[in-house]
Image (cartoon, rainbow, N blue to C red; front, side, top):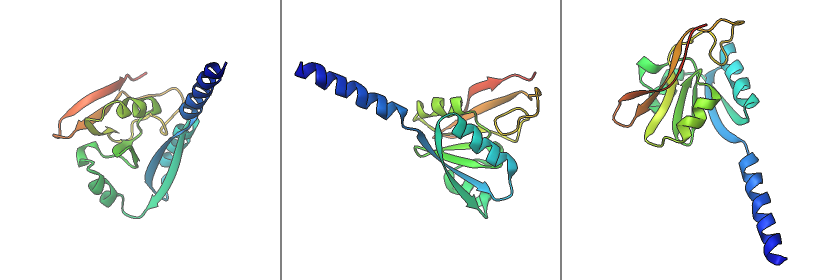
Length: 145
């Protein structure tokens, strides 16, 4: 009976750990509406967001190693990896499984990406991972509709 109680306790504690939200720091300009919409997307998908309003986003991106070619409007950080632009929550989870990557980005501000929704319109876009040698790889692709 004691072993059964111990196993039940371990199972319950593992469920509690799994239910804890992932925390992401988001750096954004105070006047950006799409940044707030992306934060809402993250929260709707179980992330806990620490919101940092910045006065110099270029300096933040440079400090975090975001190349200008991958830049967008806001920059997140999770587990030391950058999340640049309108990256879907599911792709942030994929990024966490790839510690060889410095981060992931959705360059620009494609219509239909999280935080840039516009009815049923979506531009084609890619989520691009950046490795420690500066090489890019496609993590996900989203077609236009």
